[in-house]
Amino acid sequence: MNTAQSDSFSNSFRHLWLYITVFITGAAVMVIELLGTRLIAPFYGASLYVWTSVIAVTLIALALGYFIGGHWADRTRRAGLAFIIALAGFLTLLVPWLTAPILLATDPLGLRMGTFISTLVLFTPSLFMLGMVGPFAVKRATSSLDGVGASTGSIYAVSTVGSVIGTLFLGFYLFPQVGSREIFIGLGIALLALSFFVIYFEREHIRPAYALPSVAVITLAGAILLPYIMVSGNQLLTSEDQFQTQFERESLYGWVRVIDNPNDNYRLLTVDASAIGAATLSRGENILTYQEIVSLLPALAPDMKHALLIGQGAGHMVTTLKRHGIRTDTLEIDPVVAEAARDYFDFAPTGKTIIGDARYEIRKLQGPYDLIILDVFTGGAEPVHLLTVETMRQLQALLSDHGIMALNFVAFFEDGKNPALASVAKTLAQVFPHQITLISEPGHEFNDFIFLAADFPIIIESDNPDKAVAVNRLRYDQSHWLKQRVVHLDWSHGVILTDNLNPLESMQTRKSEQYRLMMTDSIGLNHFIR
Image 1 (cartoon, helix red, strand yellow):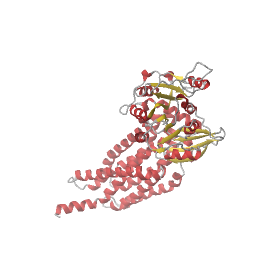
Image 2 (spheres, helix red, strand yellow):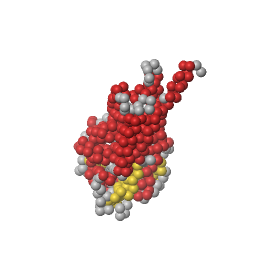
Image 3 (cartoon, rainbow, N blue to C red):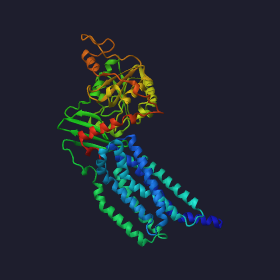
Image 4 (cartoon, rainbow, N blue to C red):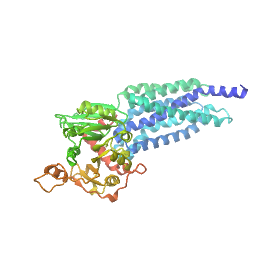
């Protein structure tokens, strides 16, 4: 090994502590960014606005950290990496403690601004400090202009690798095992511990006598606050005695809760700020009107034997279809929802139980199905990738010749001119030649809408009270009940939804705000803040 190579190797080893530091802080950035959505989503919903706000705030904070950190690194003689990392750790510890009051304060701002401002206040401080680590590390690794490019590139490459590893470790291993609040607290403690590690190796640049007291004070402040941080969250809010949380668990997809109201005799299954199942406490009977419509679907086509329910919820539709002799396969993305349905709503499968994302799982299904029910509203928003032409074609291919597709959709009616409703109707029309639309509660502007689509005419009306409709098995009273719920939509306000172009979520902003307010006003904010 020649002298140049020896010097290069020695220099790299000398800066190993820097690479370890930027690797860990790079991972911390992604952990905060990803977990940020999990703290905001139970209150504001798992919508595109939450992800947009978190990503934008992360970029803003890092840009400010790079800029100000670079200037500070050139000028400071006392503050160093240890101080910055300790402060980042302390600010990270504060996030779970501040979440509830910040969300409450931003609630009046509405969905978009509330999401952005709460994200800005909660995550900017810690991400800003972590953004400063890079410029300080480059300063520590560079003693002259010679090799500054290689040093800078190495620092940011290692930081990026740390971000990648942090993302994979969090998503594939850590998060399924540990709650988001606990991960935030653990991350804050880890950064405080890292700051003491950095003090030793930074002693050539900053005297420990300067760094150690400031880092110790920050760590002591974190230790004092830690007991309060551990018990913060719902305890900061006033509880409503009429609601009793029987079950709650954070899954990969949101906070799943079973909430009882003994005074009004009902039980809810919720995911974040969205109710996906409801039943009476006394008898366990379904109380969602739109699901009553589903109970009449077997009469619309002869000899239904096999159904597919996408979006299991509490599983009441499976029980209803069982009474008609129909075996139902269920497809549910969230295993915790399936567990809650089984343990608290007496759900018993009558067919295959599939856990996974619908777009992936339906490709593996064989069919044919006489009835497919798509009921995937959750978390204040729809998974819009399940409402495209491409998805409808996949589902149509699974239907039998006399099969019916039923799709539940929450929206404002707006005299039939709602663009989201029109878009769903136009999208279905690209695949199915026949469809009708039913409203769950006539006379109410904000409602559940059931789209029925098939390759044959769907006839529910009868003008003869003495006999059932010839083309189906509905009684006259049932036919009349459904006829009262038929609505006509103005398709001119809609667009065809595809995997390439799907503006449905932006069309549903008002709906998301209304649904969140309806849930929080009726149940209480404490059930949607962690």
